[in-house]
Image (cartoon, rainbow, N blue to C red):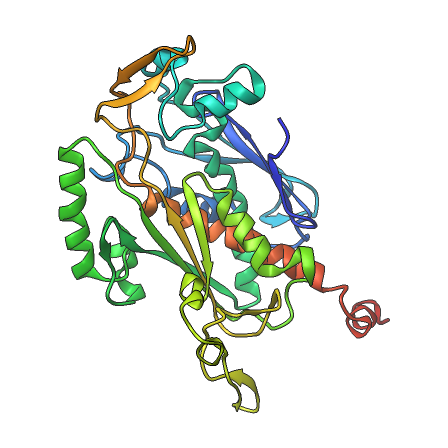
Length: 364
């Protein structure tokens, strides 16, 4: 199966299935000397692990990470970093019936059409557990960004029709939905409980803000920073749309409304507004980076649905098993990880953009 790696210089390859022995990642291209231990990675993984509240799948997994290579005496060695998380509470029997039909909204049919065979246990490679490898590698990327005083913060701005009215980042970890607005989180709770009673799920929006990013990251045409960020976020299961800055709103505005005026501030070039979301012509402009990912409702629902089986007979199904009625809160660290991985890759590539930078690096 192709397509399991991401990145150019700072590259990850994820592996494993939801109901296999484990899942993991190999990270190649990480500079030597990054301070790193399993506690740093575990903290990120704990934010996405299942079973922490009534609004997540009841599957209980410790998601304990083990670093197999690439770290010695608490620092990265510059060699490939391999990490694994073992699966412990697989209930593959919950999925035997699924082998005979195609679940609406899932990749069952498309996997069969491509490979003529699929691992139906919990979705196999298309399961949300694949993101464990992304978050583990993203934790390394976040450590590198921290050294450069670049911060990446994601949060849920919308659950169904309920939208956060405020942006108070201190509230993100104080409610189960990781919303930056406690009042909106309460409204989201009421809406989600209604969905659960109806055997349904809901989608929403995750916003991500990056501060401290320098101007000049990204390359013209096919390696634009926004293009790579869009690919990174669209690669997350369930993401159906990505916005940068004002996003879809730019289609309603005049050019004079979209343009950000350049100003001189604190002795350097800045912008009076940030409709562009920190990227112009595919290259970062030094402003805060603003991203948004719109995620569909979990397709595994307890409501009756129409579908067909492998014999092309029309049938009606009700999906059992353990599933998240809403995935945005657990996807927040995944969005942060993919954003961080993309930025570190861009930072490393940018080191060869100018001769004066190369001369400085090799100066003796």
